[in-house]
Length: 481
Image (cartoon, rainbow, N blue to C red):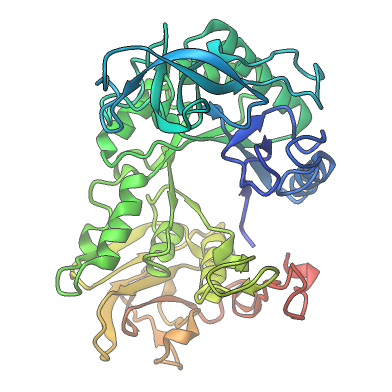
């Protein structure tokens, strides 16, 4: 279909069996040891994980591991420690200025795993802060005695080293060595294509550089490392990429916020021409990963999947296969398909087949913008595409005359997202390479030559949405996988 990488949720054992994994307990337990309520993680056993990675690799799909090395949770026992309370919104400010005697959940013995893979046992000295005192049941943030926040963590909230649970002290040399050893072990257990580096905003940048360098030098130089740094200043993110010698890419968080702001703005204020303003993709398109949160579908997907210079797109699994499990009044073991799943699938296919060649932009109207890709002779016999996005709710169809290249003169182009309606007979490209394309209110249209190579695959592809066996839908033909 065109998916080349699979970013999976945290696969290490968390502090309870149903956890999504971000409350990391044992990095060496991938669903192998009977601890925290069972052997398997929420997602399965280690053997199942290894089979997934192997089968994905055989299909040409790299698996990306979600790495949680900012904090730990689910300790076996508490330890008496001393700490000073700090302000929630300014971690550099102390509340009372005096040390308190507290009981912190900082002791990790891993009784089920023992010393297999690693004999390292975490204790209070390996952490710099906690947020709960077992003795008084108080919830606050304590910086532990003799510890300091990493000077090169983000400056939000004064210093944003502390995020949650028992905060790992990346300045401790034994901690540094253990985490570098663990990532080497992980690479020996799973044939991965890279990692998503969680919560990098809260981790020492010096440690991050050591971690990334270690991966590139001793694990695999080909691993793609995606940092999750939630920051709205694209210039700052671009400088961070340069600091890491372009060895790490980052999510385009400013673009995510642009999508959100445009979707929530009153229609008369929304201006699609500004969608990429201030985005990381404008500054570092080759080191930007773009994604969509549920505000601007499907217009956002059309942009990140088909627009040249929009970074590397990331498609949410639920936007293809639906959401499984309880949600609101929907019970356990139920499936809800997203409203735009057919369109997103066709956009992914269109990216694979037709989003090549020169690009001509028509960001010339606040409510309606468009762009064309002229095609590449080495891809799908040179077929291109034209994309028109309309944010207006006016019932009148939006139109724009756009250039697709004289090589397409005489071709009849139709909308692969036929649900947008209208112009069912298509539009013919004139001798000068122009045509007038249209789309309906608050929608997107993607126009492609009706006889383009693989057009029948795009139009007829049926994704198997019943992978959980809940709908009784017809299975996707293996030839289309």
